[in-house]
Image (tube, rainbow, N blue to C red; front, side, top):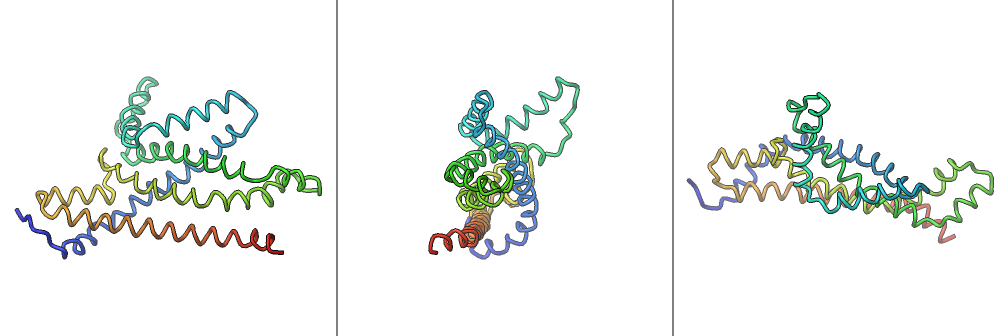
Length: 235
């Protein structure tokens, strides 16, 4: 068994790893879409006047924040089928990716609920009242005045949440999902742990590049959406 470090193995392992990025992107993309939608609902509950709804939403966020990702992943993986069996529903044959998406949807929703809540509360309430007073409907006031400003505030944290989700999603291999991390572990196992360091360096390079690209993308989006706000301030 080869134990020496071979730099060339880093580059030679990339073609085997990169095709499995589509699985990583699919899981992350679905989790972001569903998590953002659920996060909006939770944020509405936190900002609403219903005390019970507000407490439930805050409790949900607290519980999810205090639960390690890998623990939540196994709770969903084993708990959802066990719970479904009580209602006569068999989920043991369900694709592993479904449980991964459920897990990170729940986790991302907790993050997004706080991002949306804090972004909304950062906007002066007088702007909404002024918009309505000049003839805009409540929907128009939110769409034209509140939402664009809240979006600028939320973008950096939304981008950070995406990066965190992408990184936390690497845990999916622990329940058998063959994404890019799962493929890396299969390659290492097939090589009897030979050149494991090189493969994980290749994996780290991929995650570094993806994280930097996401960070740059959201920096550009923030700059683009901030132009109107900056123009108003300077005039």
